[in-house]
Length: 330
Ligand SMILES: C[S@@+](CC[C@H](N)C(=O)[O-])C[C@H]1O[C@@H](n2cnc3c(N)ncnc32)[C@H](O)[C@@H]1O
Image (cartoon, helix red, strand yellow):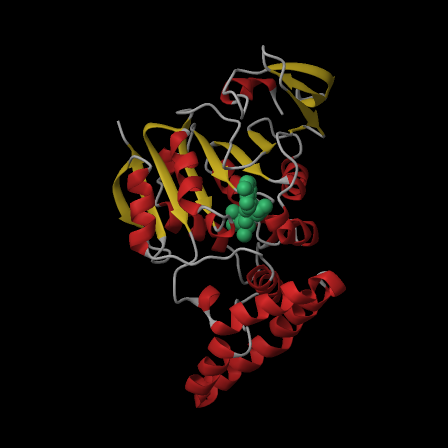
């Protein structure tokens, strides 16, 4: 972490300010190892440049495996000249509805940043990018941004974020809160960190959509049952099979007039997700069938969460029915 980010941070338990004691700095002035301390004596280590406020949460274990395996597949730089070029940027813009002016020169927080594909978009748009996630993900994010002083990644629990209230110009959480035990509380924690009139965006799985299909729910249940014996091997084997054999076959069959029966199979029996790049298909199939918690929601629910979190002018954004944005109360 760069010491200039210290004013953003606070003790997640008491809210007290933190002081930094650096044991090792690098040539870019960043603290590689050291300790963050409150005046009352709570302390948190900085390890490999990342302030560590919690360990890992068991319910999010599958993501640790996922990000170690595919740390950069969804980054724009990995997709230049490939079929999914521009997808991550379009996705972020459509979900948040944020303009370039909402980001340039601003400090923006990503709740559940994973390896950081959206932190990367904030940086490309000239913002300072702050990410929070659990243990294995933050190490991947740290490796992805190495010595960029305008990225801060912290290992923390989004329900108890180590940031001062009202600090950020904007904040978003994409594809995260439905994997937690209490999405509205997570969104409230996010909104609390954003300054008055800053922007807040959220995207969760919509009810009735792909992640709600009986086929996906069944396969998730099978994976969770087999996990103690096979680890992630079953889910991995299925994801490769679906990405390289099943999804292309289903697509062809639909083109040859079998749309209805194929849709029935996809909804009820076989998880098949067509994205133009097979690497993305593997990642997204694995991502769909492995999480322990995966709830689905309606637009009305998300609107209500945002309003309860003191956001006004809440609007649906063009990505999906459950991507919404609002402005923090003045
Ligand atoms: C599906 S991934 C989405 C990652 C990223 N937003 C993206 O779309 O690339 C969900 C992420 O939420 C993180 N997560 C889940 N519960 C969390 C919590 N309580 N605190 C912080 N991060 C959490 C997981 O570790 C995981 O990296």
